[in-house]
Image (tube, rainbow, N blue to C red):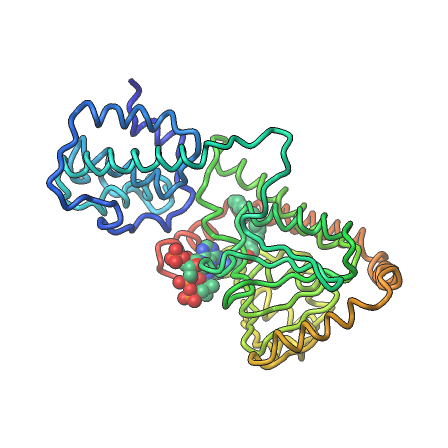
Length: 392
Ligand SMILES: CCCCCCCCCC/C=C\CC(=O)SCCNC(=O)CCNC(=O)[C@H](O)C(C)(C)COP(=O)(O)OP(=O)(O)OC[C@H]1O[C@@H](n2cnc3c(N)ncnc32)[C@H](O)[C@@H]1OP(=O)(O)O
């Protein structure tokens, strides 16, 4: 039997360093003095290989840590370097088990696998048909009423950080909204943030092709994502319900109107992250707010309040937080009653001249970023955030 730990390392690379500090109590260590037999442990190891559903990185790290603890005892490896993100996540997970006895780790491993098996059985009873409609969005809530399609970012516990799934789902939702009956489309966030921008754990899930491949795929994803905003044919409105960071700010330059609560802030900490502007902001921001104000935001990472962003032209109007939702939606419902074709055609007249240029700028920004993602400056900044040394 192939060594499970090695298998985990090869097949199940952790994509998130946030999972590394899970407390031992989360491992469902039974308070009963249980002892898993050797056979039960072996069976559990075999069952792991047969799991139909990927249990997610957090669980994979737990399995890895428990396996190592059960077979080798407390963590005995030297701590990997900060740039070796995957090995470090695994090391942290194992090390977090401290002096947990081997037998307890073995039992916890068996319990964990058994809970995975039962949940995959209960959810796996109805196999989706290959030709069935795709299930609903996982990272968005999309609704359509009163002539408005509302796309709400829905990862509030992560401040609506954008992971690959969210990037893809936003593209799908925009594509659907461009063809539906609604006359305007709104992007907003759930919870207290509009969005904290790119999910920084996106940098940790390294494919077999290595970081070069990751960066190349990231650049393609980003180019396609921003391209959807450039090409969106109907009035596109941002309802900025709270702070916005990074790509959630830069893409605002491609919206037709931006309404913000007075609680919102706007910042693009690209230099802090060893990165460079995207979302066509290298072109739109100097035009919207003057080159020197754009420099303060895009190069120095200056954070603007909603009122400052409004004064600079990035935000259309600011509302008191207490009346924000009511006032904005009342206004949008009135706008949505305007003749949809006239609005669409007016948008074309206003935007079409720039489209080609924006696509070229988008491509250039993505290719510069692709290089930046491979830089030490970028890696260092991401590691600092993920190891909780820095907030931006
Ligand atoms: C190499 C290939 C890459 C592939 C990329 C694909 C294309 C992407 C292109 C875009 C590139 C860059 C543009 C950007 O968007 S740069 C900006 C990135 N964002 C940030 O730097 C913000 C980081 N977050 C913070 O500084 C803080 O979290 C906060 C937003 C100021 C909020 O602070 P808080 O104290 O109020 O809350 P906090 O406890 O930190 O957060 C709650 C949980 O949410 C998690 N979280 C928040 N933001 C992010 C994020 N951007 N990425 C990942 N996780 C985030 C945070 O970790 C907490 O999680 P947990 O509760 O600890 O599990």
